[in-house]
Image (cartoon, rainbow, N blue to C red):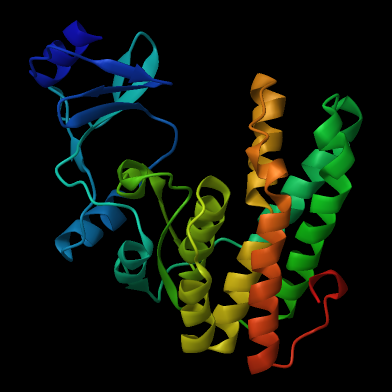
Length: 273
């Protein structure tokens, strides 16, 4: 790979580290190309003063480089910032003329796929919990469909585990701002023991009904379970840490639910009382 990087990008590489399908060296990452990017959106973001990793074009003035029949993109990482609540709160670009993904349709498709393959599941933990998490997901969908939503969309992310993925231009998506908040807290709750009650309280107190409910719905939807399921189907491997932290996850859901009920008259959810 070092010779390919030299040939296509005229960069001298002394040391390179492969993580999964990606190659890291100096302040660069050569990533396997996995989704299209809206270049117009990319340039709008950076031209408005918001940082994204720089897309480096190859010797043919193309941003996609095929190496051994595999497409890659090269990103230059010029900024490193700790991934935290304030970063997500302030990384806020609004779009009023873009369409947002329909959470209900996407989630229903995911549930249908899992239910069709339920008989192929051999892992005991997944088999015992699958109906429980599908039930939670279906409840989140019902609440989502009851909302009257606007078109106040923001720059969000598909997934983010650290600042490198947060600033990845191939990881961005236009959606409701609450998506990033919820995915951040779900990740944090599952990976460390910090206290997030005050930050979550700020979101509920300082946002309108629709935004608060979008945050709650997104927190309800068990992304970590479905990610674990996908890993099991694709790689026959599972990170069981999510299952072991089920009680902690539910404790935060109950806290959010009780906060919302103090502010708004919402439907009763028996298991969160």
